[in-house]
Image (tube, rainbow, N blue to C red; front, side):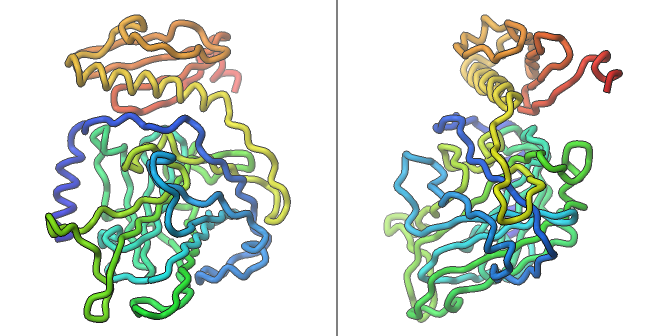
Length: 369
């Protein structure tokens, strides 16, 4: 079953998939990640002073946002960092804690799970995914780009040096007892995460990365003393899982990195106010160009062609401050690229047909740096 699913995913990833437009406004959540004052013991217990001082995130919401009711059970996260690790703690309210998968790189979302997504440079390409169940069995994978853009996931990529711990508040796989939930604690090494980070290094204070968290929750019943998933009587198939996330995408697809949350790394120690995070102007420019990407995908779907100039897009958007107008746009039968240049000519932002977005600086500006 596992090999068959992986083969199916690889085939599906080989070409552009249909693009659904997100149905939420651009307002990703924000988290100020403070530094630890001493090394943490990664065992799933969050009793250490730094964890106690770290702020909880907002409660998770349904992945489709306000279109759906609030989750039945509460989920939230905390984050910390030091020179060696990005630390994550997750707390899941759960009256019936269960898991079945014990083999590394199993398809963990077949169980109730906790998931981490990290795009270090925010270009929507080259990002990481980590999933864990209540046994602390994990699946780690690397994606060169989202599936919608023909992404090719590397399923057997590993987060070398990953530390993990899970504590169950109650017992696991024991129907009828009084569970309250489970807690997860992670230490992800910068030595691995920096491979796709800006400048190929761990973040400096003040830097921010794009991050999201997800929780998969299945509805179950007890049968012969064990938990089994509820099924649809008409089809015999399992009922769809719930997907609860920190940053909603407005559709049942987490692989929209442009909508993930902002995590800013602060020099302040845990317990101190880590400063205020305001979305940088560059992110407004990225979001503007993302609207161009959405529109080009729609045009190609409907007409088989991409727009070759700004007027051909027929797109009404507010002009980004400090940029020349209109944006530059070039297109061929299967590719296109848009360019938005700063009014002073010192820098520009690009986006292309496969969704990659990146900045460039003029030669004069590169020489000055």
